Image 1: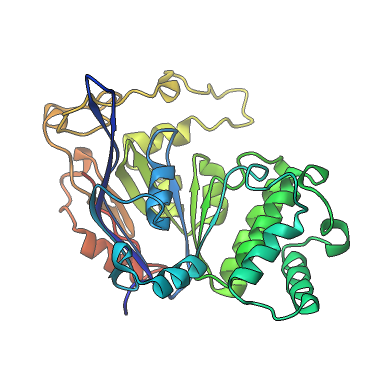
Image 2: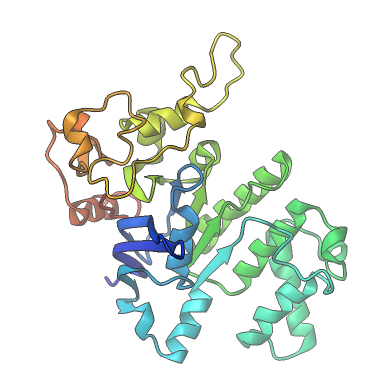
Length: 347
């Protein structure tokens, strides 16, 4: 079966500076596979600067990788014909972080639904267009009579974000990339939007890549999880294993930094979670070495491969080198036989 979307050894670097040019690696040697079936929800988590949004832009074809390939139905995005790119735009949708910036304040919210209906020829008359918009809004729990005809500022952040979910649903995509979709809305709206995303997956067979810094919501919604650190994969596996039995020191640090309603538990006991330190440019070892409490000499010189640390769990850390390293092909095969196809390889 040809994968719907596949990233092969993708690296993205940015140049900065005029006279003293420096290179920043946002994503490094990243491979990922999303099959058409079964529909899955995969979370990509990491702190700010870990490469999550850059990765989303590469998947959407908005940013081109410096190295590697992005394939849609087995064909490089850069070689798609006009018609193939149009199909790609319909089948791979995005839900952005800010539910206000995506709206034009001079247009009523109807506009964000009317545009894709018209662009992709989903309706042939005004009543048919209205019926499609109303059905999409009802699906995400909004009342059309209380939503259509209003301006963005007249709706709450949660309502605006649910309209964007409805917009994506209109096109019946095969994949939705949700980039921090609940980080700027209140807690009650957050639960509703997460429920909407889960509904799209379960009822409509849409795969979702859920990008977030929030392990709590990732645990609530996803089946598989990918932990990124400075553009490289630290850990990957089913969400139950990775969250409940984290094997990488960075994953452990992320989970340990989650505040809990326990007065006996000290939050961020060592202060490491507040740091954003990464290894200096040209460092060939593990990127987490400068922050890792278990760092070894070999960590400074060679980046660890992914080791199988549990059933459906893989960790890029020498603490687990007693296990055999695995290839991205093995990981993709492993997840294809469990919940979804996802294969990655660290730098």
